[in-house]
Amino acid sequence: MKKYDVVALGELLIDFTENGKSNQGNPLFEANPGGAPCNVLAMLTKLGHKTAFIGKVGEDFFGEQLRDAITEVGIDASRLCTDKEIHTTLAMVHTYPDGDRDFSFYRNPGADMMLNKEEICEELIKETKIFHFGTLSMTHEGVREATKEAIRIAEESGAIISFDPNLRPPLWNSLDEAKEQVLYGLGHCQILKISDNEIQWLTGEEDYTAGVNWIRERYQIPLILVSMGKEGSRAYYNGSIVEVKPFLQKNTIETTGAGDTFCGCVLHYICEHGMEDLKEENLKDMLTFANAAASVITTRKGALRVMPTREEIQNLLVERAAE
Ligand SMILES: Nc1ncnc2c1ncn2[C@@H]1O[C@H](COP(=O)(O)OP(=O)(O)O)[C@@H](O)[C@H]1O
Ligand SMILES: O=C(O)C[C@@H](O)[C@H](O)C(=O)COP(=O)(O)O
Image (tube, rainbow, N blue to C red; front, side):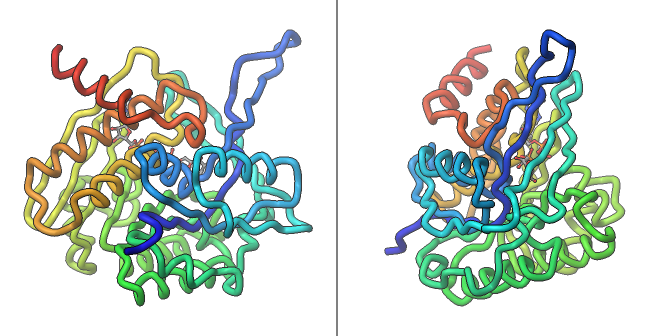
C-alpha cells in the first residue's frame, strides 16, 4: 500500500492577481498562492487524497506564506526546499474582460528554478501511485536534471506518470528548446493534459484530433485530455473520443488555475477507478466532474487555497442537470 496518491514536482509561486484600483487609480494586486503542480495537488487534497509536493521557494516572506498555504490545505510540504539567496518566484496575472489571463513572471532567477538533483527524495517518490509534473521545472539545466531524476524514480517504482506542459513561452531561451522538453515529457507519461493552444503549437495541427494522432504516432500515451477553455474538454483513450461542454458561469472573473483544477479532478478519477478499461461513460463522467470543478475556480480569484469541495461540485452538477 503506497503512502501517497499523488506526488507532484515543480513551481510554487505567488500569483499577483489584479484586484481593483487604489484611491489614486493605481492597480491593486492580491498575493495568491499558485503554481500549476501545487494547484493540482490542492484539488486532489480537497477531494480527500494524500499528496506531497517537491519544489523550492526562497527564504523570504512569500516563501513562508507558500509553505503555510500548502500545509494548511493538507499537502505534505516536508520536501519543500528553501533557497537562502534566490527569492521566491512571482507572477503578475493580467486579467482580460472575459476572465482569460496572461502571466508576467519575475524569475530571473526564481527559487523554483534552483531545485537540484540531490534534493530529490527517492523514498517519497517510491511511495506514490501517481507522479505529476510540468515544464516550468524543465526550463533550466539544474532543475531539469532534478525533474528527470524524479521521473526516473517514478518510472522505476511503477507509478503512473501524469504530464501537463503548461507552456509559458517567455520563460524559455527558445521555443525549440521548449519543444524538445515537451517531447521528453510526452515520452515519459501515461496521462497527458494539454490545452488547445499547446497542442496546436506542438503538432502544427489546427484540429485537435489530428494533433492527438500526431502525438500517438510518436508516443504511446493511453489517456490524453485536451482542455479547450470556454469550449470544454475532450478525452482520447485508446479508440474513444469523448467531448463534454463547459459549465459556463455568469460570474466568471478570472480563469487562472482552471486547467489545474481540471487536471486534479482527472487524477482523482484515475485514483478511484484506475487506468484500465475506461468506457466512454467513465470518460464522460470524469470530464463532466472536471469541467464543473474548473468552472467554479473561474468564479474565484486564485486557485490553490479556494478549490471547490466535492459537495459544491456535486451541487453544480445537480443544478445543471435540472435545467
Ligand atoms: N471561462 C470559462 N468558463 C467555464 N469553464 C471554463 C472557462 N475556462 C475554462 N473552463 C474550464 O476549465 C477547463 C480548463 O481550462 P483551460 O483554459 O482549457 O485550461 P488551461 O488553464 O490549462 O489552459 C476547460 O476544459 C473548461 O472545462
Ligand atoms: O505555474 C504556472 O504555470 C503559472 C501559475 O502562476 C498559475 O498559478 C497557474 O498554475 C495557472 O495554471 P492554469 O491556469 O491552470 O493553466
